[in-house]
Length: 311
Ligand SMILES: Nc1ncnc2c1ncn2[C@@H]1O[C@H](COP(=O)(O)OP(=O)(O)O)[C@@H](O)[C@H]1O
Ligand SMILES: [Mg+2]
Image 1 (spheres, helix red, strand yellow):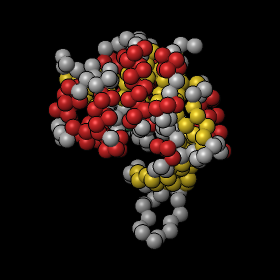
Image 2: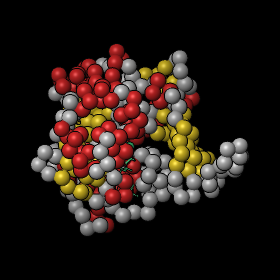
Image 3: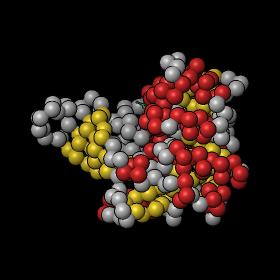
């Protein structure tokens, strides 16, 4: 089967405690509500792309435990191919703990198994990667992403990176080599600033572009996105919505952008509008995946705003 996109990276469970306020050290407080959500930057991206109707595969790992079963079932229910998702007998699935207060502010503690369960370079399957038009990764294990991109380059597969701050801090040299093999780079503000040391986002974007990508799209939360190419810099504003939870907004954006840019062959500006729309709709529901829209839902959302992307 020919895939539209493969996601290479992390999958986890997010346990979220919704609270009135953050507890002090030594203090115990009741939550308003606690809820378990499927999460992980790349797993969210995969579910987002599949909801839009793309053929999607996920490459990563879960533990051999009930959480792992829950995460695989979630892929199955969303039509994401998980034939290359490793079930690890020697480690548990990653379970992160998040606390969200009334203002929607968030603190998080990440399970190291998020990293540990990600694939190692020798676990990559060249033929599987070559069966897809595009590979999108968070580079959580930079050496694995580097090897995957070598394969992609050899086999004519488009490469895309969602760059977040933590990855930049673990292994900047490998990230530089990855960027030299990257077609599409989608960092958030913090990723772009941390990697370049430049506060100004346009300057940061131009620097990132000089490392290799053909297009850099910096997502800037409720301000939307900045698209930087060798020809131009353009700001593409976000849609105004009553956001209840922005967790996974960047992952939703990437799904919409790849849908437009890679699969439909749109220019990066139109693709960024699609990314903004998918992400804005996601923000209307709690959790990283609950609100990820179908293509019909995106059409309806845009139609209500007098816009038509021809989808
Ligand atoms: N409050 C919001 N209202 C509307 N859209 C939003 C809001 N927050 C985020 N988005 C959308 O989500 C995208 C990604 O958000 P951002 O916070 O930049 O990424 P990340 O979630 O990776 O930190 C933005 O480019 C925008 O399209
Ligand atoms: Mg992000």
